[in-house]
Structures are given as C-alpha cells and as structure tokens.
Amino acid sequence: MVILIVLICILLLVLLITWGKINSFLAFLIVSLLAGLLLGIPLNKIVHSVQQGLGDTLGSLVIVICLGAMLGKMVAESGAAQVIAGSLKKVFGEKYIQWAMVATGFIVGLPLFFDVSFVLMIPLVFSVVYQYKLPAVYVGIPMMAALSVTHGFLPPHPAPVALVSQFHANMGLTLLYGIIVAIPAIIIAGPVFAKTLKNINSTPLQTFLPEYIPEEKLPAAFNSFFTALLPVVLIMFFAILTFMGIQDGHLADVISFISNPNVIMLFALAVATYTLGLRQGKGMKEIMDHYGNAVKDIAMILLIIAGAGALKQVFIDSGISKVIAEHLESLSISPLILGWLVAAIIRVCVGSATVAGLTTAGMIAPLIISTHANPNLMVLAVGAGSLMFSHVNDGGFWLFKEYFNITVKETFLSWSLMETIVSVIGLAGALILNLFI
Image 1: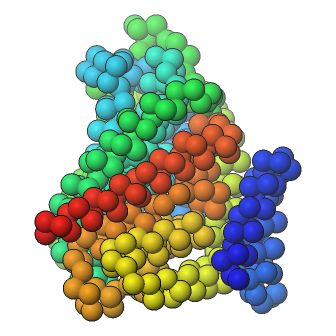
Image 2: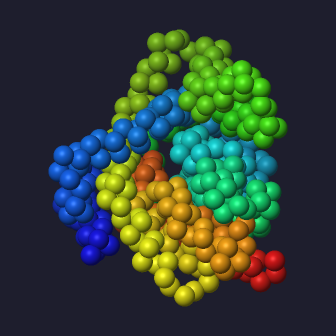
C-alpha cells in the first residue's frame, strides 16, 4: 500500500507540473504535504519534515550553487570560456569534443561531490555549446555520465565510502573494480547514448551566454584554465592530503576548514574577481552587477531543488525505504542483484542516491556473510542501483532540467535514461567481474 501511495504522489507531481502548468516549487510543496498525510506522518510533524527537507537541502547547496553561478558568469563575461572552448577544440577537435567532456568529468568527479562538480563544470559545457553551435544536451550528457558514475561507484564519495565500511570491503580493490566497471558505463551512457539526443532543442541559461570578444581583449589561456579549474585543483589537492593520513589535531582541523567546498569556492571567486575581472580592466561595480545577475538567474533552481528535498524528507520520515527493503530481502536471487534491486527501488521512491545506498546497506549487509558474496562487488552493485532512474523527486533531475532549460519530458528522455543506463551497465559489470573474481 505504501509503495502505491508513493507512486501516486510521484504521478501527481508530474501531472501538476506538465499538465497543470503549476510552478515546480509549488507542486513539490503540495505533493510533499499530501504525501505526509497519506503515509501516516503525524499532523504536527508533516510541516517539520517539509521544513527540514528544505533547510537541509538548501543548507548544503546554496553557497556552492550561488558561488558557482558567479564564477561561471565571470568565466563567460571575461572571455575565459571563449578561450577554453578554443583550446579544447584545438586539442580534441570538434569531432571528439564529447571525449574531452568525458575525460574532464571523470577527473573532476573523482574528488568532488556531484552537485559541486555539476555547478563547476556547467560553464565549461556551455562555453563549448555556444562557441561551436553544438546541441547542449549532446555535449553535456557525456560529462554528466562521468560525474554520476564517480558519485555512485567510486570512493572517496560519501556513499561508496560508507558502503565499503558497512560491507567490510577493501577500499583499494573497490576503487580498482569500480574504475573497471565505470569505463564502459560512462562510454555507453555518455558519448554513445548522446548520439540519440541531438534533436533535443535546449537553450541553456542566459547567464552563461558570453558575448564574442575580440582576440586581443581575451585573457591568456593559462589564466582562463587556471581560474576556471582552480576550485577543482584545490579540492583534489586537499583530497590527496586527507588520504595521506594527517592525524595532527590542529593541522587536521585547518585542512578540514580550508578544504570545505564552500570555502574553496569563495576563495576561487575572489581569485576570479582579480584575474578575470580587475586585471582585465573591469570595475568592481561591473563585476558585482555580473554576480548579482548570476544569482537572479538561478533563484528558481534553488527553490525547485529545495522542493525536491522536502519531498525526499517526507518519504524518509515515513519509513518507506525500510519497508521496501524488508519486502525485497526475502527474494531468492543473487545477492548482487538483490542489493542492486533494493537500492534501485528505494532510489526511485525516495530520490536520493546516498539515502538509497545507505538504507540498502543496512538491510543487505548480513547477506554478505551468509551468501559469501564479494563485498567489493556488492559496493558497486548497490552503488549502481542507487543511481537508477533519477526523476522528479531527485535534485539532480531538476539541476539538469533547469540549467539546460529543457522540458520535463526531454529531461526524462535524456537525464533519466542516462542514469538508468549507468545503473544497468554498473550491475552488469559487477556480475561479469563476479565470474572471474
């Protein structure tokens, strides 16, 4: 019954947005309250769940998204995006530009949270789109596939790391197996699948649309790449320091503070203000006007993502994820397939890949001992399941839809199918490896 209620709520959300033409944020609030009532959450706690979901989601994303939009605006307005796009074409050629996106997405996605890497890489995607008049979704999906795979499969991302711990897997082997599985998943869900998406008419956010700047007024190539990728470089650098196992209390606290994505983004924006702004002859008022316009352009995105967080929290507080896992635990199938299936269903119902993975771990962990399943491959199977069919209750769905400015239907046909392909190929890869390990 509870699964039917979840499906009805998700269907209602889709109908309100597509057929009813209701603002997505308002639709999320309406469905979140209704879901709380139908799923039996006490009346005095429903609004609290909605507020907690809104606050937790925005609290973890608002700084990064706003600062990322400001940085992207500066990269576009200064001409740095024009320089980056030109350099990429020289190295890869327009014909192989998708592979440049894949390589960049994989490298950037390893140390970064998905939402952070998404915001950081969007200006680079759009610079290529505008410079060479290529379809935005066609260029963007390969990078999104790489970012998604690293988020779901590979340590040091939070969910895979937590799964490694709960399944008593080996971090190094999990990373090695994960990379083996990730490569075909990214290729098939990225460049191969993207060839079917050329006809999607996408007009990305105007905030990333740069005016053509004469070559003599452009920033240098090193300055452009350095400033645009500075947040990525810094986060990768601090990730390496963390893995070196620095235990000193004070030094560890300092590294923890300055390696926080919010702090890094603020520092990177300060650097961009000088390198791409003041040093290029722009006045401080002009720079701040650009930043203000960037935030205005993404205000609705923030609200929509917050709305998705509210619905997710209602589902979590209702206990739906545990109910689903308990029902599926009794099925007599391969533990790898079972782990994937449990995570996939929870992901579809709840929306959060991290919640799906961690909830599944608590239910599946005892089966690893009784069935002698490979714990490293179980991490990959559950991680793959946690990426299954992202849709309207997932913040990533709305990030992609709103940034690429496409319809809900087109987002299903591109983003949701890409995530589904990644999930299925991930399971297939784990099963194939299981034959030889």
